[in-house]
Figure 1 (cartoon, one colour):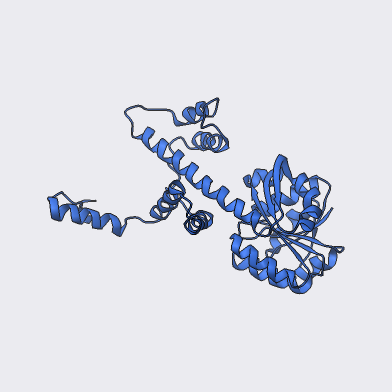
Figure 2 (tube, one colour):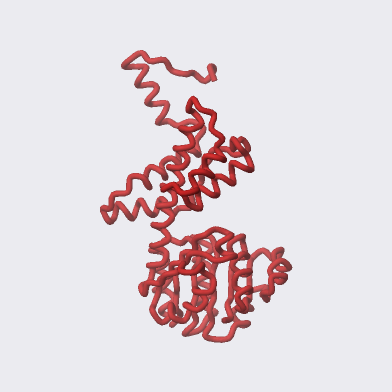
Length: 301
């Protein structure tokens, strides 16, 4: 199959390698021309413009976006609406909010262009070797994309649901679960480091990943992280978020679905961005006011 691929960051470049390795032809485009040689070395053709990419593909075209959610996707979809033709398929493989994907489906449908929202999980290794993929859109477009989805996904690792927005909704919930799982791991190892025992954390993660009920890829990655830096001394405990956790919580509230673990994990990410919080100051001040409890002043460190 012949594909256009737009967005050649770490995930996009890995996906090019996966596609070319499975025998698919790829025409690639990115705003950063410095990745051109790297992408061509993988066996893909390069286009200097979006218009050139569209012109290089035979209709009905299949164009896959691997761009950051938000403005980059919106601007690219708007431009492709002008350049693409009736019957073409545009796939958004990034972490876009499902409601944005619904709006883009409606926008492109006016031009007779199909829009597929595809959540991609598995990180860079998955994009390169075989990812987990969940896609939504019109049945006709999903059927046309299915051979390619089957090729780039790990065995048994893709699902299609014939309604717009369904793929990105699944990925949103997936990432919300991921937030909660990582938070639980962080809290568990926090307790271990403050315990009276000097556990070798790499060994703990390794053992827990063999036969325990909490084994899995995240535990494997954690063991690897401890192997590279036993106390994680080189890492600052700042937990950034991409938006998927927040969207999961907002959607849970809309649906009146109970999701306290995901909600708390998102709050902890916000807290990690602050050196000190007003909330903490308020509680300390109140404890001092009503109970005479000691407070730590700035000069005391």
